[in-house]
Image: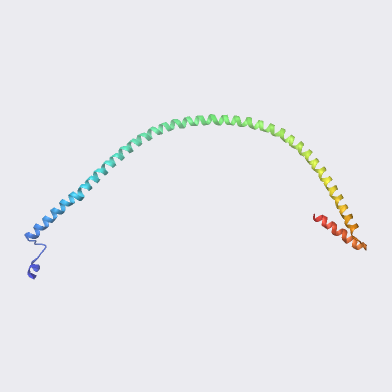
Length: 171
């Protein structure tokens, strides 16, 4: 058996090795044809059809884009004309509204100034009356406190008055 292995050469195959190699190759080729080549062929055919469909759709899209560009240019020109008309109308309307607003603002300002003068005068009178009332209340409270306390000397009276004045200034 050792002689058989030593005599083996892949460069010089014998008939049995050649027969089995060819037979295995043919079985492999048949299986590959059924299992792999058919699906690969179908996938390539499908891909070719998809590419052709995409090219056809692209051509249609280009034609539609050309049509849309011409329509867009017409619409753009019409829009520019409409915009110019609207802007002119808006300017005219703006000027009339501004003039009306100026007249109304002058009248309103005069009314506000007159009302403000009256309100200032009323507030001033109210403030003077309030100060007089507070001064009167303060004088009465100081007098009441002085009467309640039995004062023995001038220094004591002066200290009490200063304390009360500070107390009312804080309020």
